[in-house]
Amino acid sequence: MRTLTGALVSATAVAGILVGSLAGASSGFAATGEAAKPAASAEAVSPLAVDNHGLSTPEARNVQCWLMDNWGYPGPLNGQLDPESWKAMQRFLQAEWGYPGPINGVHGAGTDRALLLFLEADYGYTGPFDGVWGPRATVSFKRLAAWCAGSC
Image (cartoon, rainbow, N blue to C red):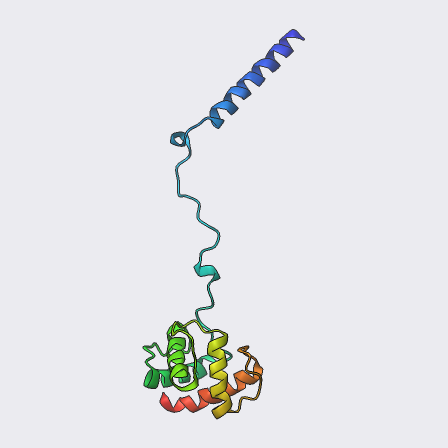
């Protein structure tokens, strides 16, 4: 029994020394490697970079052609309404339809509200002007895209 107790005390002492050594280890003894990276970045929670507002790629390309011809869209003509496309749209809406916001390519309720005013006047939009994009807005935007095909 005495041997068993001695072995148990010795094992406990060794375990205590090991735990104490690991707990007191400095960063010099820590494992080297790449630092942990955050699970999400600011880019991961930013607004979508491309939003075609219901347009197909060819329809969105038509709108880009019109924006390139008239409102300073620099390209490319890829059918993806990206921030550069929306900046050109905001320039148009500011000049012609009272868009009061910044020309930053981040479209939101203000951009949509001004776009809806334009679509109501020229492309048959009949709906609320609450800055919320809905199916009737998409139908009118598609009419604009069809008209813009003449720019491509």
